[in-house]
Length: 307
Image 1 (cartoon, rainbow, N blue to C red):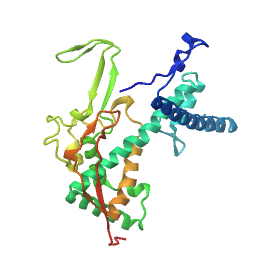
Image 2 (cartoon, one colour):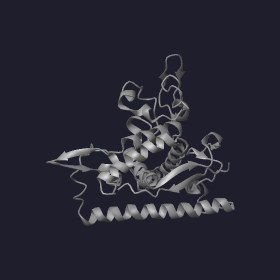
Image 3 (tube, rainbow, N blue to C red):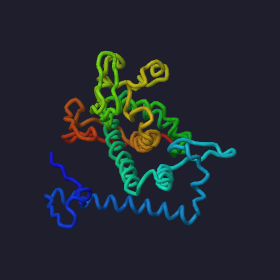
């Protein structure tokens, strides 16, 4: 695998006399990064200008201790501190630079589409291979849509509890982000092993989600694993599709709603049948758990109207 280095960080050593070249693939990557960074910088600049024009009145009411996706009570109303506002506030306090903000926004954008897209593909594939479960999902979706005159609202999406269990079980089998790495800042004593400071530690979610100590018959697709009574006594670190702890994914609630909003209309309007099977899928080792070979489904329109 080729690596393309950012030469911007090396300018102090080369001063004004450095020269470098990129391969065609590297040039294409540089072009795409320029487009991505330009889009992100435009969004950040517009939000900063908005707060400047409004004299920061929509920033000053938030507690300094607030974090993204948490609420604080102001009178009888609850307000959410949007991620970008949080980052801009940190920059105003000298904690972040504009480049830091851009990197965080780029990360959020990346996590917000590629991971969700793969989760949707794996969910649809599993439903296609398990007709009985697909029928139960469709029955729930049709009932919810019937109650809401054929529309999906924020409330109705939250009511799709069986579909949510299917998505969670999909993320157990095929976590979009299947590992993370951390560098230990100090020694950590485990039960039988001492991890020295400065060690790169890799947490492999894909294997954790198949640990027989927590997941009987781990290769079986079973949404009932996520019934409340089955979750209650399970180790909190046995299921990690969004990581856990203070640095877990801040978009996990949105991701589940987004997946429901995309999958529900498809199941409502189509029967899914497999053309290719997941057991034959070759999975690539990338930042995202993605297939190396094409994987096809058949979408058969449903003529019957349920609403």
